[in-house]
Image (tube, rainbow, N blue to C red; front, top):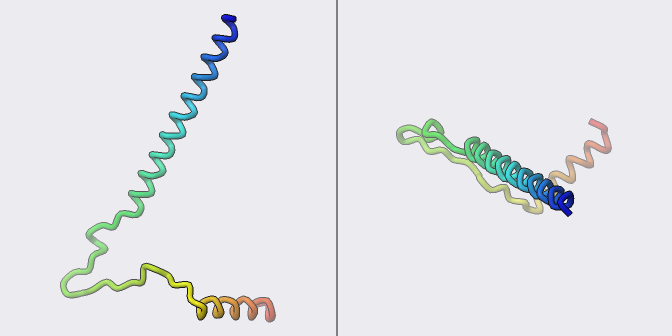
Amino acid sequence: MPGSLSRLMDVIKIITVFVALTLFFYVMIVWVADALEEHSEEDRPKGRAVKVFNSQREASLETIHDVKDRLMFFYWFGE
């Protein structure tokens, strides 16, 4: 009985260390991802300038047909 209790405590320790390290690495990955996504003041335009961009890519039928045509060209000519 004392051997099985010792073994149970070892398993609980291993599980605790595993969970703690998993949470630590998760927090570190989230922290690094947030640090990489932050936009600094340097990215903002100065004066009357306006920064324009399309943040959402629309998946329209025209885009799908264009991709299909380019892929078929690639397969047909091998370029």
